[in-house]
Image (cartoon, rainbow, N blue to C red; front, side):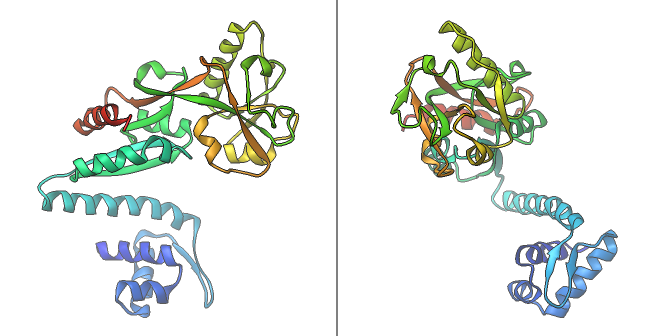
Length: 295
């Protein structure tokens, strides 16, 4: 199998148009069609559904694309590393909407100081990032710290504290407030992300409420994403705790974010790594981040 066939498959997957893909690849459309057919025959699966008007990936084609893209990326990286006398690669996990707050300025400085380091990103929700740390697919993560299951098996470097806001429906009784105290929320239901990180955040919230002398109501709503919560939340659904930077995300006109004013209600934002992942670049990045995080 020629490596070029894989690149042709990736190009066609991107454009879903034989004419455009062939033009980009500087080859004829019939030649591209023959190569794709040959690739399908060799691997024994149909990669595309195609007729005279439409080209689209099959489900098998989508799965194949993910694996082949990684192979091509790794091959290109290896070639570049050899040609430049050795490069390092690091994969950083960061929550959705957190790239600007947690990484943008640091990454510009780090890339300038380390031109031989290739940085990959996994923007995702916390459970996926944490699973990536345990599987070694993620080298270091920037996460709000909570005491989730098996968190003791990871190494945390707390960098700074970020204030907490509540996400509420725009018609919620607290929506027009400029700020609230934890005590103002004692009768509010808690909206949580599904998964072990969301469960741990709920337990931390309960502990904070207990220190204020009350027990919060149990969860009323579990959601797979912040976007889902923003679209489905009702005035009586309760509140969702979020880091302060989510106020800038403009997720939905259905919701608003209100500051929690208690000084002891904040997220510790941490750099997280797995102790068995011993890539030298990890420690280098963490040290750089800790040194420059206030710049």
